[in-house]
Length: 343
Image: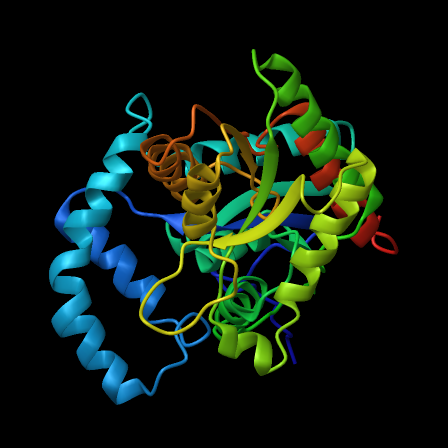
């Protein structure tokens, strides 16, 4: 009996022993027009990790109320910070650069393939996992670009990744990098970068605020560790800077809706400080690895205006680590640590 040679299906991945590293950040709309913003906001605000309200009620609120007005308002905000040269949001520009510079830092190791994705918007996690598998990766390290863990950020990246795995016949092995909120390399990088930016100012801040993205208070009460990790990051930064709690305070920004969120609120604190006589204020955002709407527009524009309109004189929004050398050092450190045993 003649035995036919084995044939490979046309869509069968050509697996070779390579390892993928996928950086994932929150996301950005494809454009600032109404429909682009609506698609982005609907995907984001439909995530059950982000909004934990009862589904039937939230469907009505989201589709009938929020998505009728919010896309225009947020589109105007994004338009203020849009990278017109590349026609994209700054988060996409910076995350791409972080991936490219990270790859360059591992130059010479041909077993590694680097890529990046957005949890909401494009490029999607599913498309980039497929790309990495097509490059021969049978093991993939996913790095959610959040120093502090939250169910609404880190966990939802894992959710989306495993949703994609459900559709794969041949699944790669997956690792999800844990947060690095108290890693000495991260603390050193953010405090040194802060000091370097402060040294450029022609004035000295009377106070520094460490502003983190907020989440509903209910999430903390349900057991989410985010608040505690933010508090520890800020404490370690403050101790390394040799400052008191009166000189270096922690606040939370970007609240949404009527529920109580983590406090103190950044905007209310900025207003109160200006009214109390603080004239010089700097705000650092160590929960973000890349500048985005929340840091450039919300802190650098909205909160600056609040401070100046209420009696403040000098305001500095400290840039994130972005794709700077210290920023890439932190990401490389996390990646190298989590690749142990694979590389």
